[in-house]
Structures are given as C-alpha cells and as structure tokens.
Image 1 (tube, helix red, strand yellow):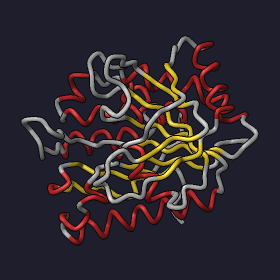
Image 2 (spheres, rainbow, N blue to C red):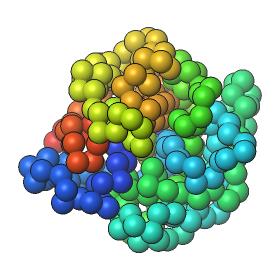
Image 3 (tube, rainbow, N blue to C red):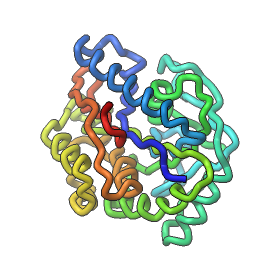
Image 4 (spheres, helix red, strand yellow):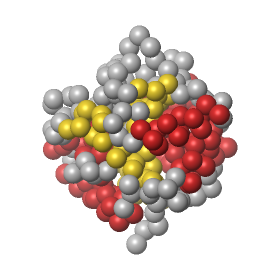
Length: 271
C-alpha cells in the first residue's frame, strides 16, 4: 500500500506553551496551516504515523547514536509539564519498527532502538495539532541533532531512500510526519536568531524535490543558521522517502517571540 500522506512542521514549544506571545497575524496563519495539514492527514486515514523527529536530552545522555527508532508498545509524553499539551501514552507499532530496523541494517544503516523512548515537545507539539485524540499508532524515528558528530545530510536523505520500499509495501496505511526546524538557535548566544535567507533556500530546494542540493548541505552550513536548525535532518530523511515528489509550502513565518523560523510543508495537492 502506498504512503497515504506526508507533511513536515516545526515543533517550537512556543506554539503551545506561550502561543499568545506571537503576533496575532502570525499565530493565526500558522494555526490555520496546522488545521490544513491536520484535515489532510485525517482525510488520508492513516493506520500508523512514522514520526521523523529529534529529542532535547530527554532520553540520550551517555549514549548518543545518529538515529534511534522506537520499538515500544507505547511512548509517554510530553516530558515537559509546562508545554500545555496533555500528558498521555502514545500507541506504538513494534511490527513496523522492526521491519524498518531490519531494512535499515540490510541497507548499511545501523539504527539504535529503544523500547522505552520518552517524547518531548519535538514530537508532542506536532502530534497535538495533527492527532489531538492520539488514536493513531506512531513509530518515532529520532535524529541526533544535539551532539556532534551528527549524521550528514546526505546520509539522512539516503536513509529515507532505503526505508521507502518497506513503507510502500506495508499492508497498513502509513503517513510520514517530519518535525523540527527551520532556523533557530535555542539556548545559545544567538537565541532568537532566525536566518530567513537560509530558510528560503532550504524551502526552495525541498519544494523542487532537489535531492542532490538537499544532500549537499554540510553540517557547518546548517549550524550557521542556528544550533536548532540541525533538526532539519528529519526533513531530509522525509525528502529521501518521497523522492521526486514535490511538496508545497503551506506556511512560513519567522516568529521572533518563538525564536524560530516556522515552516509547514505538505505533499498533498492543495484543494
């Protein structure tokens, strides 16, 4: 069964934790965009979501791998009590996790795996907007975006390409949701910095499905747009999965109070 829906969305905690800090027009545009992709996702009726995401020191401290897939029956989240997202147990899908893990190993990608992964705002903010009832199974695939060395952009695109056959052949309806980004520098000396030029170039390459250009990014180039910008490794994996399919930009806003260039992308054609 083909992948039934794919989208990407930023996961800035300000979207829920301090929503009214943003200018009203920017908040309205982004909330409307989330409504758009939520409606598209629900119309696609996925049985399971592959969530391409990152964490923020909620699970990995002494052992940090490039990629980690969740194999649990459930995942607890969010870990942040201030996020204004109800705490819940998100249902997992160990069978799909195992299939993706085996495919990754067979393709030369040695993913780590966890049976007890905890979800923070990086996963729970998008899920809160997209699946507020939390009834859809989720397989989280986390990317190390915090501690160098990180996987290269080319490696993340390649991982997506390697996983695509399993996703396309899976008997259930699968949605892909990538989270994180765009440019931001949380908790660093440049906190609040948003590189709109970087964001515009990245979005242009993504919406043209220019995989060679996306894979050509270097870690230093991404980090120059802010430490949090490395979360776009998840978006690059999504691009690898989707190949030459071109997405559309649903919304982009550089939201200063949320300290993030927030983008929302959909692979569904506009109605």
